[in-house]
Length: 432
Image 1 (cartoon, rainbow, N blue to C red):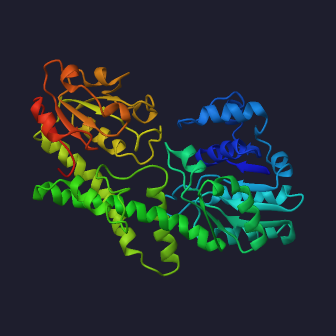
Image 2 (cartoon, rainbow, N blue to C red):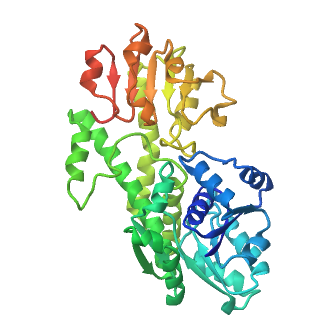
Image 3 (cartoon, rainbow, N blue to C red):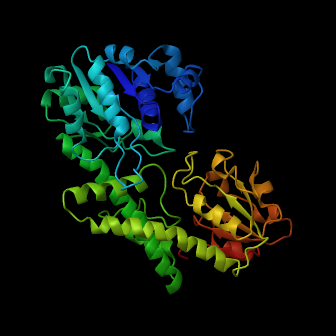
């Protein structure tokens, strides 16, 4: 099929490369010409395992093309995916849909024959209605059909999630169009993906409801971890015991820092704002947001306690600063709160992250990026494991400490408390 992906961010580029790999002809469009130039030279603007190889393969074959000419791409495509960002609006916490609506306005100028227009961006319910209204001002309704097809890609696992999805959700008020999308996804359906069809508003709601529920699981187990620490219970045993109940499941029941990234923080806020517009109080999700914000403060208080409130002139090594492993995404990471706080209190910070140096810390004094774990931990007073990158799971702390028994705060519970105690380290973890 002939496909156009508008937006070459995380969703648009990953989906475009994967659709091309399934044999489709794909145009990826972005108004940022410098980004298009990079992509045409096989440079990927963000880190995602396996993506570079996939882009190079399909770009070389001619199935994947990059352009800043939206008219060219749209006229040569039958299915148009809107994959632009929907960040949080600062004034009210709602989703900023300006990029989505700007795309709709552009499409109203260049649609030349019947097109299926798909919102893959995460958008609140009724957004599809508004896109349809914008297009209808300049184009006959017979020239387009607006549907919703939300993405469920996890950063760090995006290619696998695209190829082996739990479900494919398509929201359309037109059964013929639903069949067309089912044909597009047929290679994935044959491998076991469930194709679920609903109406347009239903699909829009499914995305927000799913993310809000997963965020709730994370905040829930983090609060249980707080209780476990005081009651001398191992939260990992509690998580396993709960997860064995198939009604609950074990995924997202791992205690740790506050949730972050590009999805959960903005989507939980956006769905509560939407609910307020419909005069519905989503009190549980509002409590989740409050709990997650409080989580960042609680972990800082734990660091203070570990250091007996003596932070000044302490050298603190932080292993991993992204919000999760296998991504370079810093959005809403707990480290963005933790590092400035510790610096303000007089600490000296070294950090190492496998995805590289971070511009977010560039202007902060006494924050030094190190090239590996060993250098980051050199002469440290406290080592904080913030992100569970695989290489942090097998560190020989005895070897890198060189006799200096630094304290270790394992925010991801990667190590056994007993084993760490046996080799002589003061070890602290979450909910244990």
